[in-house]
Length: 358
Image (cartoon, rainbow, N blue to C red; front, top):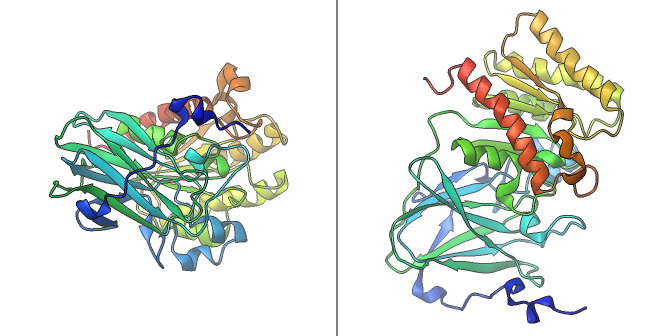
């Protein structure tokens, strides 16, 4: 196969020079920077405590170590931003770019709440145990930055390297609102976005400058009791229940969907809940939507005015044929349309429940 990078230099993944001895190295997490969406446990970044993950399905017990939704926020006046990544193995999916599976992306944040994509830290093909990648700004000035973690790969360690003597701080804070919690399938986890910051949750977070927690598990979202109880105990502003895809049958969904709602409400009486059904039209969508509507209607009849419903058939709109990689998993356009539809509902929920104190 022709190495296209030898023909078109725009496809070349440049290797950073070995200058780590001239840089200040900061192991993540640390007190100088701010970590969101993941935490460090047992020598790796995770999304769930191990004791919770281990008593769920095998899928959750494996995928909780994937870093979907992880973000590092920091400020610095360094021109060079370099990451040094270590993992046990490089993840690979047949239908998802490595930039989304195991890459990191960098964003610049601004005080008005806006942001700008800077670069993708692209892992080379031969990066089996980790890699180094860097970006160099044209000028030295104080910047607020966010690094987005891979959507699928495990990350054992992350080191941030910046110019010797450069400043380092926690970056801009998110708005004064508790994180939004998302629970769902591989789509929720981020398959098949081309970059970590292009999952629908990250897009919504970028639009609103609101923190989030991604508990999407490929093939592993089945509303099991341990993870349902764990989520019920989290201190969040909104619970987006994107639970549909991984229920193997309509009957399974019927037996678990309302039960998940009851578990959340048993520990959290006031958190708004947004029920979302699947965006594609396979696997008996009408019957599945009927189950989700039943949970919503039953909750409303019981006097719960903090439940909301979004029909997944509206997520892609008329552009369905352009929105997926394989008929199921969204591409970047699909995630953009999902973000638009879900964000519209979230804006309504935030306003009606005065979550920003306005």
